[in-house]
Amino acid sequence: MNEREMELGPDQIRHVAKLSRLELDPGKVSEYSRQLGLILKHIAKLNELDVDGVEPMAHPLPLTNRLADDIPSAPMPVEDLLMNAPEVEGAYLAVPKVLDEGGA
Amino acid sequence: MNQVPGCRQVRDEVMSGRTTCAHVAKNAIDIIRTVDESLGCYHEVFDTEVLETAEALDRQVADGKDPGPLCGVPIAIKDNIATRSGRTTCSSRMLQEYRSPYDATVIRRLKDAGALLVGKTNCDEFAMGSSTEHCAWGPTRNPWDTDRVPGGSSGGSAAAVAAGTCSGALGSDTGGSIRQPASFCGCVGLKPTYGRVSRFGLVAFGSSLDQVGPFARNTEDAAMLLEVISGYDPNDSTSADVVVDPFSENLDRPIENLRIGVPVQMMSDRNDPGVNARIEEAIDVYRSMGATITSVDLPLTDYGISTYYVIAPAEASSNLARYDGIRYGHRCTQQPGETLEDLYSRSRSEGFGDEVQRRIMLGTYVLSSGYYDAYYKRALQVRRLIKEEFDRAFNECDILLGPTSPMPAFGIGDDMDPLQMYLCDVYTVNTNISGHCGISLQAGFTDSGNGLLPVGLHLQAPPFQEHRLLRAARMFESATAHHEAVPENSPG
Image 1 (cartoon, each protein chain N blue to C red):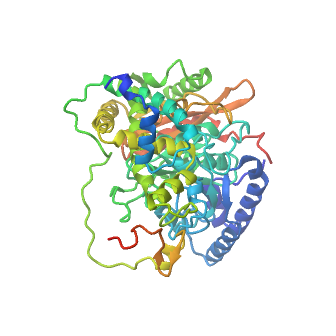
Image 2 (cartoon, each protein chain N blue to C red; image 1 turned 180 degrees about the vertical axis):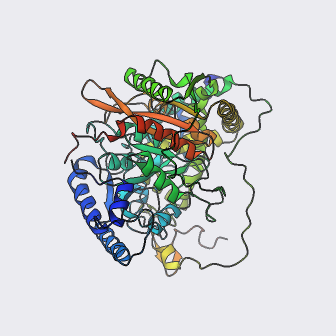
Image 3 (cartoon, each protein chain N blue to C red; image 1 turned 45 degrees about the horizontal axis):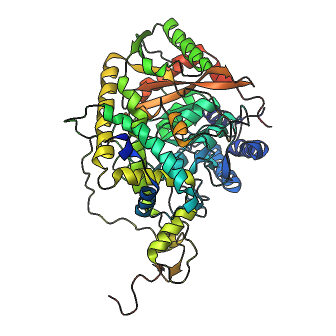
C-alpha cells in the first residue's frame, strides 16, 4: 500500500465516521483528516517488515475455552440493571420507534 | 508536608494498636481536602463510607481479629474501575451519571483485604491519553510542578500517591498508563503480566492489552497490593490460572548473578539528557551490586508504536460500540422524526471527547473492509515478531532496563499533535504488545530549567515473573534514596 492510499480524505473521514456511528462536527473533518493521516503515515512503517507466514497474534496468552458447570447463579436484580438506563418503561428499556406504522 | 503513610506502615501501626483505622481515614480525608483543590486527583471522595468502614475495621481489630493484609490502608481507585460506591465515569460525559451495579473483582479483593477505598481518581477519558488532560472535568496537575501534567492515563492515581493523599492506588495500563504517570510523578507503578490480574469490572479499552496494577511509594507496598489483587477469576476468562507468589516475601533478598539487558533502542540520544544520565547512574548501581550488564539489540521494538496504534484503537472501536445511548450512558435529546441510528450517532458524539472519537475512527478504519489485512492483520503479525524478540532477549537476560519515558513531565496545555502524544509511550507499549510485566521506579531528577522533575527507571521481566521484577526493583531502592523524595512544593 503506497502513501497516497494511506491518506484519509474528507470523504473517507465522513464514511469512517458513519461506520463508527459518530456525528462529526463538519468543521472538524479537515482536522481529523490531517491528524489521522499523520498517524497512518507512522503506522505505514509496518510495511518495512516481512511478515510472510507469520501467524497473527491476537492475544498474549494461549487461551482455550473454559466451560463452567451448568449451575444457575443468582442473577443481578432487574432494578440494578435498569438503574442506569436513560429511559425506562416498567421493567423495560424504552427506545425510539424502530418500525413504521403498519410496517413489519 | 503531612502524608498518609505507606501500606506496610499503616497496616503495622493499626495492628499494633499505635493508631486506629478511623484516625488513618480522617487524616487521609483531611489531606485530600487540603491538597486536591489545586491538584485535581479525585473525582469523588467517599468521606462518609470510609469512616464507617474504618470504624468497623477498628472493632474487629479490638476483638483480636486480623481483618486482612491491607487493614486500614487508604487506597485510591482509577475511575475506569467499577465500584458500587459512587460513580464510575471514565472521565467521560458518556458515563457522567453511571453507577456500577457491581464491584470489580480487584475492588472486592481490596475490600476483603481490609483496605479503605478513599475515592475515584481522574484519568484520560476511557484511559486514552498520556497526560490526564483529555478529561471531561479538567486536568490533574503534577505535585512536583503544578504547571505540568502528571502523565496518563492514570494520572490522578499517580499524583494522589505522590502527593501523599493515600497509601497506594490502582490504575490500568494499556500502553504505559500506569508506568508513565508513575515516572512523571516519582512513584512506583507496576503493570502486571497480562492475565495476572482480573479485568472483570475494568471498563474495557484494549482487551488484549489492558491490565490493572498498583501505584505505591515503594516496591514493598506495590508488592503487597499486587499480592491482594492478583489471581484467577472465574468472571474473567482471560485471567490466568497461575500460582500467585507471595510477592512481598523475600523482597530484600538480592538476586544473585542478576543479568540485566539494556536495549540500545531505549538509550536514544533523543531522550532528555537528564533522563539518560539517571538511567546510566542506575546501571552503575546495579553493576556495583554484582549484576552483569549487557547491551541488547531489540530492533523490532521500534515498530511498537505503529503496532500499538493499530491494535489498541481497533479493540477500542469494538469495545466502545456498546455506548449507544440505549441501556446506559448518555442519550441525546431526541427530535421528532429522528431514527434510532440518529440517536446512536448523536449520543456518541455528544458523549465522547475528541481523542476518543479520533481513536474510534482510527480503529474502525483499520478494521474496515479492504483495509483489515493491510493494517490489523499485519499489526498482529508484527505483534508476534515483537513477542518473539522479547522471548529471545529474556533467554539471555533476567531483566530489561531503560527509561520509562524519553522525557520528564511536560506542560499542561502544551500544544501536541496526537501523534506526538502517542510517541511518549515509545518505551512502554511493547510490554503490553508482548504481554509481560514492567515497573517504573523513581530514579532521581532532571532539571527542567524551572525546577526538578522525577525520572522513571523502567524494568521489565518475563511473563509471570513479577517476584523477580519486584526483587530487582527492591535492589535499586535499597541502594538509593530516590523513592524517599517528597514533592515539597506541592500545595498543603
